[in-house]
Image (cartoon, rainbow, N blue to C red; front, side):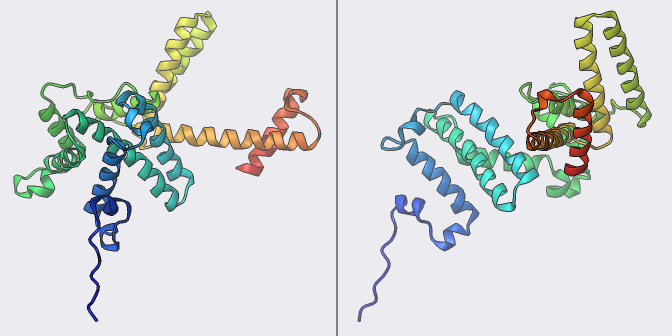
Length: 279
C-alpha cells in the first residue's frame, strides 16, 4: 500500500496550527504572532484590529504593563506567562502598524534591541577591550550613542512620579552625584519634613504642595540609596491598607453596623484588629 504523505500546511494554517516542532522554536513562535497580527490587520482581517492606531493603543500598553506587574506580585507562573503574552501583543501590534506605514517591522524591533545589547555589553562580546559591565560603563555607552544628551536624560515624563524620581536619581548616582552614606538622605528627609511643617504652620497652600513634593522626592531618593524600589514599596503598602480596611468593613458589617456609625476610637480599635488578622 502506498504510504500517504502529509499535505503541507498553507502559511495561514501554519499560523493557526503550528507543529510541535514549530511550537518549540522561539523564532517560529515570534513569526506566528507577527503573522497573526498581519492577518488581523489585513484586508480580510478583524474590523476592530484594523481601525486601531498608535494613539488608541496607548492605554492598552499601560494597562498590560501593570497587569504584568500584578501577575509578578500576585499570580502564578501561568498568570505571568499570559500577561507577558498580552504585553508582547501590544509590541507586535504597534510594529505591524509601523510596517504598514513602511517605517519598520517586528523583525527590525527584535534586531534593534539585540544590537543594543551587544553594543552595551562589550565586556561580554569584546572582552579583549578591557571594559567592565558596571552601571557607569552602561551609561557612558548610552550617552555616546545619544550624543550630548544629559546624564539623566531618557527617563520618560509619562512614568508614574515615584518611578520617574527613582530613575532620575539612579542616573545621577551613576555619574557620581550621590550621598557618601545613608546619613545624607536621612538628614535631607528630616530637613524637608521640617520645611513642610513650617509651610503648614504658615498656612501657605502653594508652599505646602512644594514641600510635599520635596519630601516625597527625598523619600524616594532614600529608598533608591537603600536599594529599595519606592514604587513597589508603596504598592505593597496600598495593598495592605486595602486588605485591612476591607477586613475592618467585613467585621463591622457582621455586627449589623456601618463604618460611618463608629466613632474614631472604635474605628481605631477595629483597625488594629484588622492589622493583626490580615498582617
